[in-house]
Image (cartoon, rainbow, N blue to C red; front, side, top):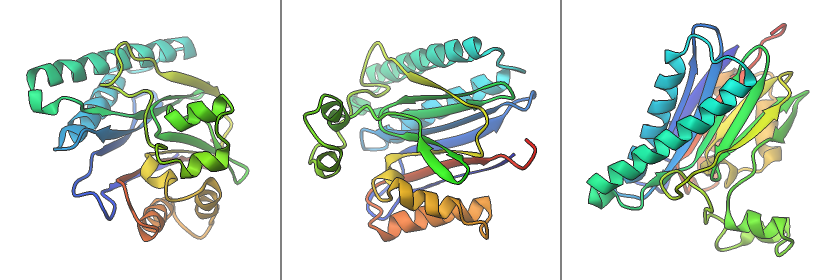
Amino acid sequence: MQTYYLTDAGRVREHNEDSVIIVQNDSGEYLMAVADGMGGHQAGEIASSMTIDYLSKAFLKMEKIGSKANAVNWLRESVEIINNNIFSYTDKVTESKGMGTTLVVAILTKEYLLFGNIGDSSGFVMKENILYKVTKDHTLVNLLVSTGELTEEEAKLHPKKNVLMRALGANNPIEIDIFDVDVNVDAILLCSDGLTNMLSGEQIQKVLELETLTIEEKVIRLIKKSNNRGGTDNISIAYLVKESGE
């Protein structure tokens, strides 16, 4: 496996509220996660870092995550704990009221690949040089598209396209959507909406299929392209590529 992750403040925001991680446990299993914080005044950064820190430490404490069912339960229990931790923090630190974070996460073992998401950070897989989006955004416009009140094109231009229907620290109880994905993929990409709001899926795919670039160069190029198109938000990417035979 080759892995690389990077986060960038973008060209507009004064500070970076995103957090991102890729870790591997003693059994060779991978956890990838991106969290996009919200709340301003550094509070979003606290919410996203609390989320990523908890997930990575809890994952590395386990020698092996176990069966697919065990992994699903672990994800659900983890987000409940993180959500409670965020609410406890905001109760103690009144100026942090309203802070929260999105989350997209992937767990890769030899036997299975799971994605989970809360909010509008996205998870993709690459298979035979085609990029497929796995996760579904928890946004107001996505809800309106699903009910037929908006078209896909109208949703892209809607003034409330970034209004979240679900986020850690905003909903209690919290629910994470989990996706069981065919493990036979070539690569996994997780990102915050700072990437997907600037680049289309086709534009992201074109960069990822460039064979002349290393995995690090692909991630850096995606961030540069997002910044060149305005960089209106923080941009975070976690990227894993399987090597031949894996």
